[in-house]
Amino acid sequence: MPALSPTMTSGNIGAWQKNVGDNLAPGDVLVEIETDKAQMDFEFQEEGVLAKILKDSGEKDVAVGNPIAVMVEESSDVGAFESFTLDDAGGEKAPPKTAAKEEASQSSEPPQAGTATAPPPKEEPRPVAKESESTGERLQTSLDREPNASPAAKALALEKGVPLKAVKGSGAGGRITKEDIEKYKAPAASPSAAAAGPSYEDIPASSMRKTIANRLSQSMNQSPHYYVSATLSVSKLLKLRQALNSSADGKYKLSVNDFLVKASAIACKRVPAVNSSWREEGGQTYIRQHNTVDVSVAVATPVGLMTPIVKAADGIGVQSISAQIKDLGKRARDGKLKPEEYQGGTFTISNMGMNDAVERFTAVINPPQAAILAVGTTRKVAIPAEMEEGTSVEWDDQIIATASFDHRVIDGAVGGEWMREFKKVVENPLEMML
Image 1 (cartoon, rainbow, N blue to C red):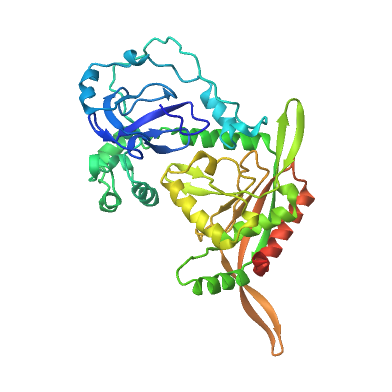
Image 2 (cartoon, rainbow, N blue to C red):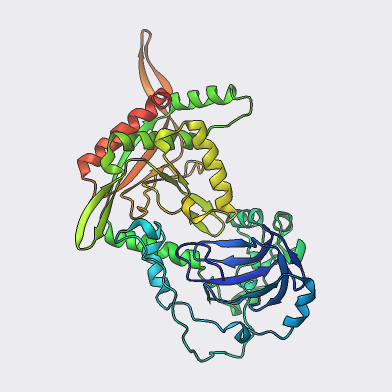
């Protein structure tokens, strides 16, 4: 079992993409593995032949380092491993019992950070003799719990409210495709069945959902939040965006969020206290102030919220920010992000502006960061204007932005100063071009 993220101590086996006897080349996907962050493809990096599968699809909590398969160099050697067992490979060790607890303090920064909030270096647990706890029931496979569906199908099912377990896949190996979701029709329930059966469904929490729950509970319990809101005029920004996109000849297409990421990075440079985090190490308590602004951008994926990072956003242009966000967002939804691409960050932005029903909202700080910005939808507001003929009305495009600050790190006056600088940049967007 490979370690696909720094916080991973065990994983669940998904669908095997190769059969016994198949040749393997570097880059071939061998098996799907569900980690504490997402369901990921494990790509084999050597040439060989799959001789034996030791862990079938559906095996849960397989500790990192445990044997899951046997590879040989030549096809002629496959037959020798027909009766090969897990015990022949050295047996297996149990995953650490404290893994769930450790996830709560490990998933936001890399282990080499050297702070109290950073995860400790990963230690290999010793093999522990454990009595089998078989219930006699057939093992529920990973695909039963997490249906085998393409990322596009998962996203569409989430949008339409289609239960993936009820859809029969038409793709390779029974994989659910986007077309299967579009063709799905919910069966009509009979009155008698509805009366007899339960009126709810229990959905098992995935490893990623447990990690998100632990992280956000930790944030609300340990970080004293306070909130600062401001109404921002984005009329000039929208005109600048339209002008730039019109002259791009299809080379790029900037979004409002691209400009807001850049504006937040500029505000963090002007008010560096916001670009900081609370640290406790070796009996010492201090505030770490970062020299570069790495903006985490909240992205909704079929398996939960992820925050890929735009590195050094204060030092790159809006076009570069836009390209990075598109690439990171796509790979986040496909479960293809590397750990260093979503762990860390010094400031977070969460934008729900694409939902015209959300005027404003507040977000939970992503520890160990000290601030997060929540952005609502754009709305047109009538503004009185004094003209020679009298008072008339002009229409202004506005958004409401709400920042959440950690009061241990950022005083109220400092949070207000940051919001003033952010508002100034957004309402005078040419400052981003300097």
